[in-house]
Length: 130
Picture 1 (cartoon, rainbow, N blue to C red):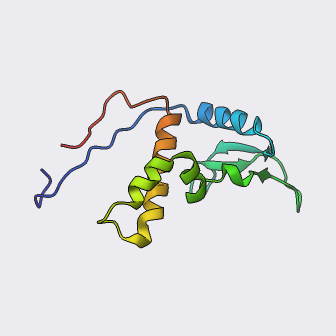
Picture 2: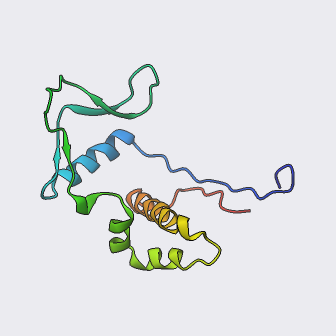
């Protein structure tokens, strides 16, 4: 047990090839009707913060369309409620969860499920709960 007698949680981490995941995400997104993603980006990090994200690889003209994602593909409570109605209903029904936080909690759980589903399964080693 951690100092102070609290509960510890072991978080699992699955090793993935970030460039491969990005390439597969682009391929899947571009296959969807109504999606536009400019080829002027790369998955990379840039100074001074060196945080992984999208980095421009070419000059971008003022007013140029870079990314267009239809509303049906936005990560929002409304789309999560359509994709995972049982999960959202279960979270909204939790009596100890503040009513003001229920949609946020449901959205977080839905995003976690999407990430888990996209990673190809559970990690090889999981710390789990003690």
